Image (cartoon, rainbow, N blue to C red; front, side):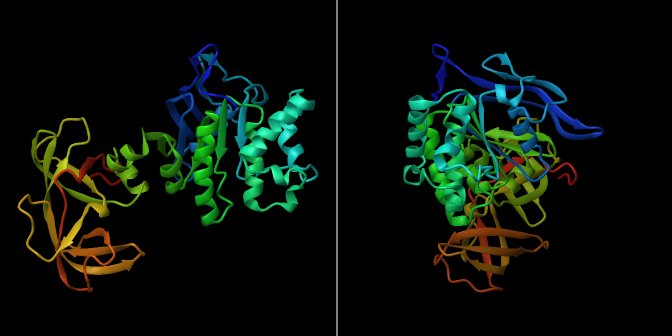
Length: 373
């Protein structure tokens, strides 16, 4: 299988240099710069129409960009047809040949490249073993489950040792239990083969579970690119904080800034917040901070001295097994969500509780453009 190093140890990287895609006056992808290192598992994450599939199809060669360049290991591949790019692709629909066996479906890319006989079969056997398909080699696609067909599509995309593997929402047709199983399998296969994976999804869990890095897009532009933990803990924008997991948004005015922290005065609370953005903050400026519900503690005692707290009435309790989602109604009519361990508190709707959080739990984010702070 392809490793992360090629050409005498020079590492491949994929660079998108200012690529954009327009359809007449409609802009599907704004000018985009992105570098993907060899061997990375990078997920393009965003809602429908965000541009993630346009990027993937441009890399594959199926959708030529309107402007910009695509470079692989320093070589411009923008104008190369798909069949000359040596990239593997796995689509939502597995596109298996119904009249060919699993063995012959997997071997098709090799035959198309003139690789036959014992050499071809060795490569086929290797990926069949990797995908746990050797026992199904003589079956036709109609004799396989959806999960097994997915494995065939993945094996076929890897058998010719592609430089990149492009995956367009490949798990969307599977049920939830199978998707979770495949997340672990994809991660293990990626470690085994060392090939660069570029994965498109709108599923947050898939992105968080499998990726080395997540690129979040919206409306044809990249909003943030970072490892999953950094993206979750330090979102740059309100959209990122909302799209990747759940967040409370504290809206108010800056009253003090010092040592990477700020005081945010909101209608129903005052909180210390971490200054995640690098731009200068003016005293009195409107601002928005994101606070994850699992970072909020609930108690019946008095508020802590650091001032990062709010008092409200329990408006809703949702049992989720190991945790409980609690919604507090604050004095100004807004709500605050908390996620606490099941059994931590015996709660009832209507009772008054104090919510508190650590001073660095809330982080300033760029507000949504259409809403502002």
